[in-house]
Length: 241
Image 1 (cartoon, rainbow, N blue to C red):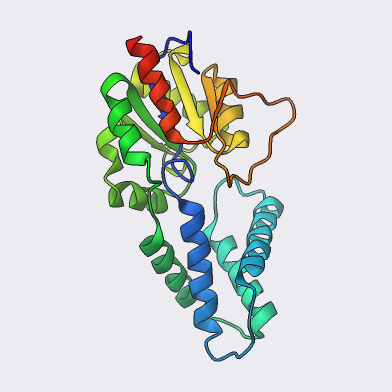
Image 2: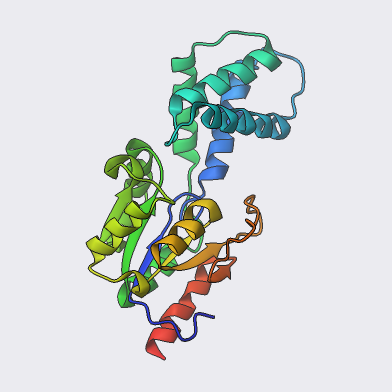
């Protein structure tokens, strides 16, 4: 894998690539729901309710044409789902504090993240390119001391461009002082990461983890597919060849 490509830079996504954001978000929802259902004797299937919640939030973002993640829309969805199942009105601001405290407490790196970053940063210029709110993404970066590995960190809210827009990838090439074809971009979301890298003229690598919920997109072809970040060690082997 990665044979015959000449790269000197690697861009990496953050959420669900380096950091297990999805699991912490789910735990945040469960803790919040349990808090409000403490006096309810009914047993709830929190897994299915959580899936329903994510669909509500996704629909709200789609209907509002939101170009960036919106906490307000996520809060609205949380209020809606709690009202549906618990028949109560909640204080949205106070409830969101419970939610945020939980996901921040429970968020973790994937087990291989530090190992692969420590290895790759020796031979390559690394850049972090992530969609999201600055407050959320900076918290994750600082909690796990990830900045030490990267020559540039680009957060969509901070620069006014989000994947798959070419602009955020162009900014990365500028920051790394590299050409597009000298860079490979790695991420878990084909709509953002694969399409964006392909359009920018970079190599694209889809991190398709075993529990990845993103489906293949017709006519969108990544240059490479991996199931674990440790497979990127082959880039080192190829470079040191």
